[in-house]
Structures are given as structure tokens and as C-alpha cells.
Length: 409
Length: 146
Image 1 (cartoon, chains in turn purple, yellow):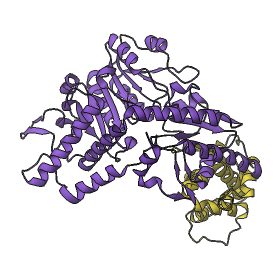
Image 2 (tube, each protein chain N blue to C red):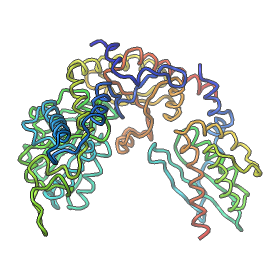
Image 3 (spheres, each protein chain N blue to C red):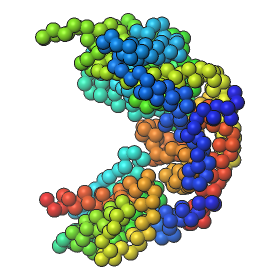
């Protein structure tokens, strides 16, 4: 994998920010887009923009073929059995909310349990809080070990025969922890629960095989994996999806509409009410092509190497606190940290003046922040286009940040 | 550091002094106006307590967690409103808001240390940090006027 070649596909990286070459270390928030994705969307709007699944004209057919072609690319990408199991959504949040509002709201009742973990993103917490409120089910949390990882013993203790739904993130957006989803899914199934996976931080970086994981639902977003914003995917096992009611009603998703009742289209379209996100889906298809050309295994290996390099270099900075597991093999390309008593906002502002983009704040994971006993943290996250030189610049920037704040104090 | 000059317009000495040695840190006892406010996008939070006597801010204290800009702004704000009429305190908040937005602001009021925060207007991502304490103060006095 030649990083210089890869970087050439990302025009945005070739610029100066605040007079310094841009070092983009915020891909866990959103990734940059290769020219292939940008051009695919441009070609759609210039050449064959049209609504899908309607009418017979030529542009409409081209748009429909491209939109459904993207669905097939997603199916292969996650190894789903059929395109009926691939629903386009607005993103991970909408996908998880669909499972909550449809499957969970209709199947859970008082006395049932929902199990999630303390490291979840708000989008994998709040939908379940709402389900618990509406159905009377109880929300339970998997605890974290000292290094921020889950323990399978704790998973076995927490999931009981009353548990009807387990929802856990594959990769933590804060700790970078990669969770043993396959094992958790097995334990969930042994107890008769369905397994939901928040794959937002996994799909861009790890080869995902939903059949091998044997999860019941898998949610992810296009924009974190080189695709455009506004498009995401909900994978669900066909037998479950077939029994579920749509949550949005209107055009596109109907079979017959009578005066007082209607019937739905078959899967997956019954979950795609209204004109879908056509350009987004086609753009996501182009992103998948790009990632597969590079190779997910190579991307994953590159990020592990970079994370290990960054852990080593960053650990050498005096006064730095790095959260999550220390061993490189246990984490994806996400490093969350705090620097002495310099607030992460101030760290991010000083780094920004050096052209380095990192995230600062609570990362939409307030329960995890409380567990870490931090009100906020800074986070550097890496993707296929980042280099060891980027890490060196970050470390240099952090040393400067320390110096700057010790001087002004 | 290459961009020191730029950063120095943000992190002025007087700001760092308020951050390191906050004025009016603490909580006022019973009978005070209490306002809790947070910035949900970043996790900064402030608890502001204020005592009003005869339409004048007799005392103000703050507790909270946040970055240098939000905490120094809170420190300066409490310092500035003490002894002012409630209406003047609210007027000052409007002036501060204009300053943050880079608009021309009423300069007939003595702004004291607050003027040091002017540089924040050049860092749009940090404006919300600077205005947190001021919004809390305005919210507190909204109830007062009703």
C-alpha cells in the first residue's frame, strides 16, 4: 500500500490550513472523500439525475440501475445473503433508530431487558432509553475493565434469559477498542436475544462479514468510509425484517393503497419511504469500490501500524494521559488523550494553528466520559491516507502546546 | 511557534491570568439566583449564583468546568457585573455578544478586562465557549424581570 499514491486520490489533503500543510486526524468524525466518489456524484447529477423506481424513461432506468447496483455493492461488502437485507438509511443513527422504533418497540415488554455497554455512542444509547420508557423494558449496561475493554465473563453475567436485545459497538469511537462481537452475539443468541451492532467505526476499517459475526442487525454510515454524508445502511436478517413494520410511510414503500389501508412493497423497499438518497447511495457504491481496490486488510494493517507508532511516540510526551488499552493489537486507529491540565479545546485550538485537525469534546459518549472521569478529551483518529509523518507532526504540535501553555501561565 | 502571533490574540495574558486565578469562584448561599448551563457540544458547564439587592447585582460566583476561554470569561463576567444594575448587566451581555460576532459594539460602557476576549471573535469555533457564562447570567435575570 503506497500512501503517497493513495493521498493523490484525496484532493482536500493537498492544502494549507493556517499557513501549514493540513494534517487531518479527525476521520472518526468523518473521513475525507476520494476523487472517485466526488466524480461519481458529479456524473450522476450532470448525466442521469432522475427519480428511481418510477416511470419508464431512460434516465430513470439508469438512475435505478445505479442505485440498486450500489445496494449490491453493499451486500458484497458486508457479505449479506441477499439485497433484501440491505436497507439504505440516512446514517447509523437512523439505522439504529429503525431497529428501536420498529423491532424493539413492537417486541419488547415489561420485564424484558435491553443490554448495551458503557462505551456506546449516544446514538446507541438514547434509542434504547426511549424503547425502555415506552415498553417498560429495563436497560442494562455491560461494564468495562480497567483498560476500557469488555470482559466476556461480564457479558455472560449481564445477559440473561430475560434479555431480548443486545446492542454493542464493534469499534469504540473513543477508546478504539475492538469488541468481540461474534462471541457476544453467540451469548445473546444462547439467551434468545437479538444482536444489534453499531458498525459506524468498524465498516471503514475492518473487513465486515455479517454472516460470520451472525449478528441480527448491523448499522453503519457512508461518510466515515470515504462516502458522502446522508447515506447509511441497516443490515437485518431477512426473517426479522419481514416481520417488522416500516416506520416511515409514503411514496416508494407501498404495494397497494386503498382508501383506508395499504400494503407494503417487499424487502428492502418497504423501509425506504419517499425518494431515497440516490446520489448518496451511488456515491457510497463508489467508496466501496475504492476501499476494495485498496483492500480492507491492507487498510486495517496500515491503521494498526500507525496506531502502534502513535501510541509509542505519544506515550513519550510528559504529562499525557492516553485512554483505553495500551497494547497496539487491541485498538483501531483512534487515540483519545488529555495533556496535563491544558483543556482539550485549548489543545485543539493550538494544534489547529499548526494545521492539525483533531477532535475535542465528549465525542457523543457522555456516559463513557464520566467513566473515564474526564469532562472532555482530545482525539486523534487515523485512516488510510495518514502517515507516520502526520503522527510526528501531531507529537511535535503537542509538545509545542505544552510549551505554549507553560509560557503563558 | 510559527503562528504564535495569531494564537496570542486569543490567549491574551489577562485571559490566562483569569483562567489560572479565577475571580469569584464558588457558590453563594441561599436566597441567590442559581443558573446551571452547559454547552452540550463540548461538555463545558457552569453554575452561576447571583445575589440581587435593590435592582443591583450585590454578588456573583461561579463554579464549573471548561476550557481557558469559557472559565476566564466567567471570571471576568462575574467581576464586571458586581455592583451594576441588573439592566446594565444585561446590556453588557448584549455588548459582549456583539463583540463576539465581530460587530460594532457600544463602547460607552467600561469593559475593563473583558476587552481582552475580543480576539475570540477571530476563532469562530470558540465563541460559544466565551458566551456560556454570559448566557447563564442573562437566563438568570430573565426570571428576575418576570
